[in-house]
Length: 308
Ligand code: NAD
Image (cartoon, rainbow, N blue to C red):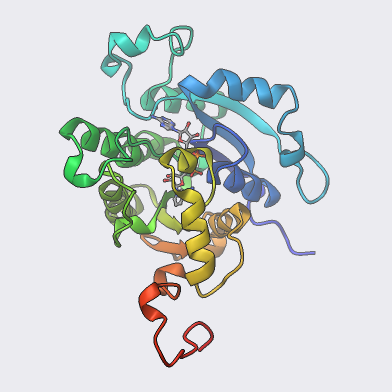
């Protein structure tokens, strides 16, 4: 039997609030490879998530291939909009979904993990938030644009700043992007396309800086469409999934665990010379320059473009 690639590794996954998204799928793939898992869960959804986890609501999707359940060592509240406690405005502190929770800024979570576990080997950023995502860029406010970048891109910079010092030698970090960073996807607005472009650019710069400073690898996965909670909130995810199935080189469904498995590879020593890359895990959709189901391709001679 092949040796598991992440035995004795501890992974912190920021951005898990249910069992539908990429963060959960990555956690499972890492657990399959022997890693132990800790989560950072957005403060407003912490209670409902930890309740559900405790009450067995996720037991079916926690099942690993050997029949055991993925163990989650600890769930930390996290609001990746804030680096230090002093930055949290009163209106957030006193909000009913925050008031009974503390220590959710990035520096505080890093400090707690250091106290609880000493070090981590794997850092995953699987979170995004753009309050004006449904607005075209031309109609996006400065506030909405900066908020998208703050929570979706700078949060990764900050996570690496604060977790780098508690990551082991040869540790690895990963974030998740989307093709809208480099191609126009109407509907993915509010500065979210900008935020993903920043994330991919930062992946390269941080690969250099964190590589030299801590010997840490930094990579990104540009994932295809998945019907997660965040994606459903944008409103057109089912259309994106259908579009991909008709137009991508591979016409199968994209499973979250395919992104999970690719993440497990990038985060393991099997990828020990890979850093600063954005890897497409999207059934190949990124490679296409034509939408095969476009009306304008229904030409008179009926050339069979789809199969050639
Ligand atoms: P998801 O809903 O599972 O994950 C997003 C998470 O971000 C949620 O758990 C949410 O609670 C958390 N979050 C939001 N604001 C936060 C904050 N301020 N602090 C901490 N956590 C916060 O959805 P997902 O689609 O799996 O998203 C995970 C990552 O994958 C995101 O970066 C997303 O952009 C990326 N991605 C998704 C798709 C897709 O089609 N679903 C495609 C490509 C990339």
